[in-house]
Each structure stands twice: as structure tokens, then as C-alpha cells.
Length: 141
Image 1 (cartoon, one colour):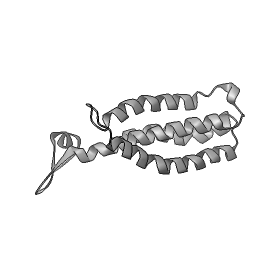
Image 2 (tube, one colour):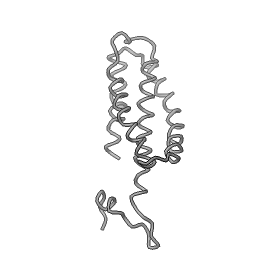
Image 3 (cartoon, rainbow, N blue to C red):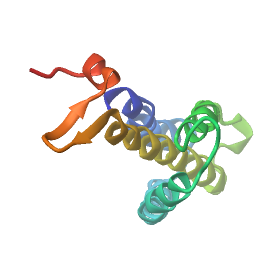
Image 4 (cartoon, rainbow, N blue to C red):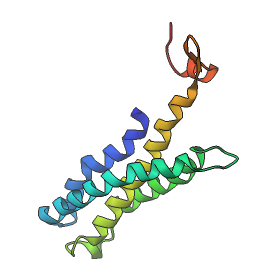
């Protein structure tokens, strides 16, 4: 899942530098963002899995979450790194909100993307038999 981890790693790698050095957020406030998000992240993955397992659309269970979540994640990343200058140095609520918004959208995308893989093989009495999609996207002897 290398491709889906690039956006969130972009956020997590440069967030501290951007908000502390460029926007003037204190390290304590940024640590508070990370602390709060850790607890939200523990809760949101099972919730999104529960919701997507019960989604019934003509597109399937996972695709609507991916189609809606991906553009929202892009908007979250843009908003995170496009903070207006007048917000520099004020309390950290804008940083909290955008960091949590972007992180939870990443959870939506990764939970649903990872749930696609078990569907790419069919169980037979002799064991799993790869579907044409699974054979095309992976190496198998």
C-alpha cells in the first residue's frame, strides 16, 4: 500500500516543520495535536470499517468511500499547507482541525483500499485461487 501512504507521510513528515517553524505554533500545541489525533485514530479505523462493511451501493461497498475520500484528502492536504498568514501564532485549533480531518480521511481510504485485497481471490477446496485481477496485480508461481 505504498501509493496510499504517500499523502499521509507527506503530512506527517513536514507538519512539524511547517507549523512550528513557519506558522509559529508552539511545540506544545503541536504535540497536543498529535496526542489528540492518536486517540481519534484508535477509534476511527474500526468505525470506518464497520460503516464500509455495511455500505450497499451499485458501486460496491468500498468504491464510494474511495471516490469520496480521495478528493477530500487532497483538499485536506492543500488546506493544511495553505494556512493563511493571519492565522500564524494564534492558538492551534485550525491546525488541530485540518490535521485530524486529513488523518481521518487517510484512515477512510486505507481501510477501504486494504479491504479490497481479500476480494481479489476466490476460495476453493484446494485453497485460494487468484482471480484474473489478482494474477495481474501480483506475482504468483
